[in-house]
Length: 252
Image (cartoon, rainbow, N blue to C red):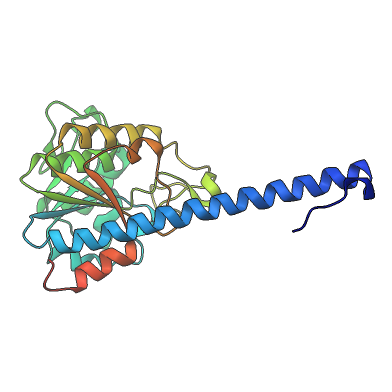
């Protein structure tokens, strides 16, 4: 847009023009930042696909909506799978972590722990439940970060993190979980869960294991908390990049 003559406009008109120009500049800057971020993530995915062939991989599944389009059965053939909570309703991971009392009661009623490895914290509400594995001492963390911690205790070299979205739907306002509106879960129109604890716990695990490589899988518009950007052993790739890796028999 060319230079405008301020004298040709009323004060209110000029104020509106300036606001529109500033907004356009802000949108342009934001678009450039997104393009830059996406280019870095795409480059990271290419490097990962070349380096990862001989590594022992694991996949830690949170239940954020970003993992919804991924065929979880492909993961089983590529590495060890750690999951959380209601994942058991549709898929059997190698290790299931559930620390919420309601979920443990649900699992106990289903008898899931009799034939599958389930980990939880000690709790007076279910001291007489058999077949569960108990963290000693209790981590006191949420299920997702606890599953990430468990995967890091094993001899996995590269750990993919899926469904750790942190941010809620509708720009962080609404509950983000694949199992929203189902038994033992909040409604999809409920307020988003505060993600600060999840992020701190995730960050703690990654910092404590500097020799392991962590790869968080996100959607193209996925949220990356500032605290995660500075971790040298954490990288990000897009869901589409993970799918390419899983479909290439020469990589995994």
